Image (cartoon, rainbow, N blue to C red; front, side):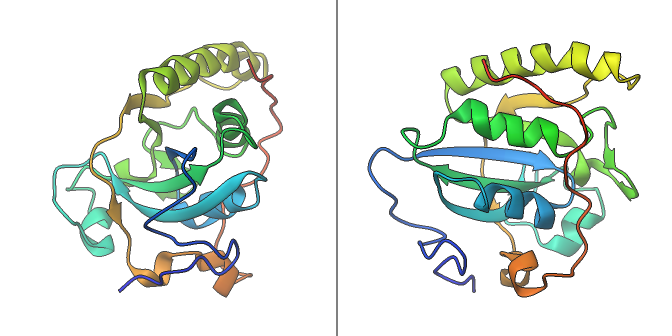
Length: 188
């Protein structure tokens, strides 16, 4: 069973959020460090980690790790658009992992670690595609490959097991391969 209250943000992990809240989903490798980046972003109401983009209903971590379910480790971000823009969340996303590595992040290899934005509205899709396009020359100028980030409509989100939720809050020295990649993208 998943904890009901976010230990850092003190809001429900699932359930009601303020009326104007929006939801965004990001996959950028291991979800532990990715989640922390978003819960540290002002204007984010709550975060959780889970699995998206695969074929198995309600997969377990062990199933996702086989690579056979097709899921990505994802972060669900509930945010107040009057306090933080979707563009700012995309900036956090693009600037804190390597979006050129395809089905991996560093030593984490497999489809579950791919770079992906799961959009919930046509506006999110349009903004995400524009930000990806704007990031391409930044990445190219840095001598990296093309941006491999997928931008796809959000499907079912399966909440990960409780021990994954806010993992780096409970384990401050735990594994994290996220942080600034040294590249900067201007918000639109």
